[in-house]
Structure formats: structure tokens, C-alpha cells
Length: 230
Image (cartoon, rainbow, N blue to C red; front, side, top):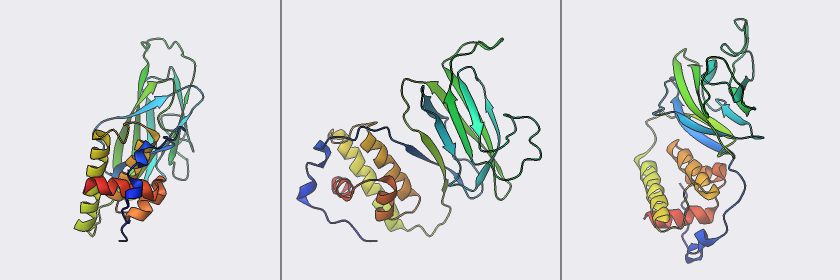
């Protein structure tokens, strides 16, 4: 793996203005090739007016079989096909369903359903090997979204991932910790979200260069994190 050359030019890197746009993608490495979920708690989705949120299984080996909303009074759910739990008579649906889309609506009064600013979305999936998994998403009313796409990615089971790669990941994790302790990196900022995606790609076995490219992180930021972590 080619390493980045560290330089004193990156010392003031985190003093640069932070990007202002909403971060688009949050990677969720929950699944694996066997279709077994590794989710430990519901993932929170902040749903706001004018910003739909997409849940994608396109990067995993799993297809969506069923979905349920516990509180549909302020949110509607769509799928890229006919899905049990959303539409009737879906037994003859052909093709894999891989994407769900959530939209905020004006509050509805539903008889027997207490008003609440939250809802729980349950998603049932099936892997190519026929094994099922359950995914939980906590839907919360918000004035603005945190992410627009939640992308489920498979956790690699390949034991060929080297110890060296694990050591590199630990260096960057330590670098992020130091950067936040020294107030160079702000929790929840757009840059922090890019760094989160970078670490996720590294944990999936990608090289430093590929992880940086896919997450949109510049070489200067990567070099600075590497320096802080050593």
C-alpha cells in the first residue's frame, strides 16, 4: 500500500473553513455475505420538510422483503417495487427490492394511535443464500436532515485482510480522537462525516487511497490524521 508523505504544510489544515452543505451519504456496515445483521441499536434518521431520506441496500447482497412503520402519522414510505407491508397483492412481484424512500408529511390524526414525534421502521431482508435479517430505524421529526442516503454495506468475512491494514485503521482512529480532543475536528461537522465514511471504507478492506477517494477526503486531511495518530 502506498503511504502518504507527511508534511509540515498540513499543520494548519483543520483551521480551514468547513464545508457548509448537508452531507449526503452515511455508510452502515451492518450486513455480511450471509445476510446476518450486525446492528446493535436502531439507526436514527432525522426527517425534515422538503428532504426525503433514502435507505439503500444496493451495496449489499440483501433484498428487502417486508417493511413496517409503527407510526405513519407524519411519514410515508415508498419502495422501488411492490413490497409486502406497504402494498396489497405483492406475492407475484418479480425482481429484487433494494431501496426505500421516506417523506415527511403533515401530521395525521389516526384513530387509536397516540401522537408522537417518532416512529420505528422495521425492515426485513433476505440474502442471496436465503438467510433473513431484521433492521431497525428510528425516525425522528427534525428541522433539517443529517444524511440524505443511508447505505447498507456488507461486512467483509474475508480473513485475508492483513494485520497491517488493521494497524493502519487503528492509526487513523487514534488520529481522529486526537484531532477532536485538540478541537481541530468538530463532532458532527461535514468534515467529521467524511472522516466517518473514510474509516468505514478502511474497515471494509479498502486501501487508504481508495477510501479517501470514495469518501471525498483530501490527501492533506488524510496525511494530517495519519500524523496525529502516530
